[in-house]
Structures are given as structure tokens and as C-alpha cells.
Length: 178
Image (cartoon, rainbow, N blue to C red; front, side, top):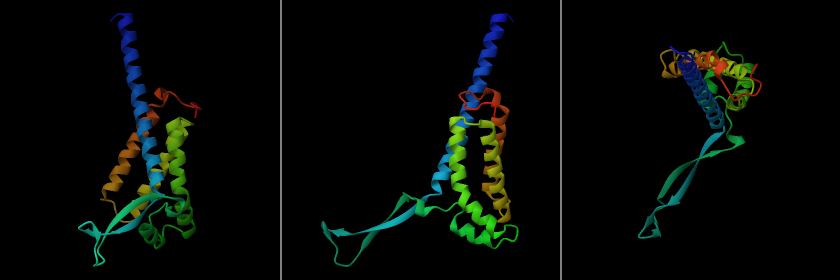
């Protein structure tokens, strides 16, 4: 193999690894950001009278439509139903659950943003991995060892490890050292 063809092959391999790192970084960032945003989601119902012959009916019939909306007042880091279940769990102290509920959404948003922008990528990705470990622990406490959510979080962990392994190819970073 000539020196030129070896250099071309090395360039292609480095480019492929860089593209792989960028795609993993984008996927993990978007996943964290959207999950964090969804912590602020809620639904409202809107009812409108059913029309008969283009006139509101006289029977009081309504169509009810659920509308998704985002606001600070809808925030639940831990969904309400799970919060009640976790509050009865002896391995989770009440103060820890309150703090976790308060921090989870903002942590996802901040980590998603730092990963997307490449701000201290290694540290941000590592912290996201720790967050996913905590989510896995919660699912296991719920008795969900066979639950697909545990497997999905395992796949997320594989992607995090892959991105950490590709960190030298992770271009377009701020504070690349970290």
C-alpha cells in the first residue's frame, strides 16, 4: 500500500469516527433535551358543543379534546404516580426523592444542552450516564427488572460508553479537554 493510499484510508477512518461521534452526541443531546422538556408537559381538556345541522345541539353533547401544553406549573421531575410509589420505598429517603424530583428536569435540560454544544463533553456525557444509572435504579426498585425501560436505559448506557470511547474524535467542542 502506498503512502498516499494509506493516508487516504486513515483520513476516511478518522472521518467516519468523527461522524459517528457527532451522531451519538446529537442523539444523546436531543434525547436528554426532549426528556427534560417533557417534564414540563401537561394536558388540558377543551369541550365544544356537538353541532347538528350546523347548530349547537340541545342535548348538551360535547366533544372533548385533550390539548398538550408546556408550563412551569406542570413540572414533575418524577411523574406523580411514580412519586407516590417511590415515597413508600424504604430505600429512598423522602428528602432525596424531593431533591431528585426538583433536579431531574433541569439536569436533563442542562446536560442535553452541554452535550449538544460540546461544553465539557466528557464530563457532561459521564454525568448523563450517572443520571441514567439513577433512573435504572428507580425502575429496578419498582420491581421492573424485566421491564423494557431497564433495557432501553441499558442501550443508552452503551451509547454513552461508545461516545466516551470516541471522545478523541468528538469535534466541534468547547472545553474539549474535559
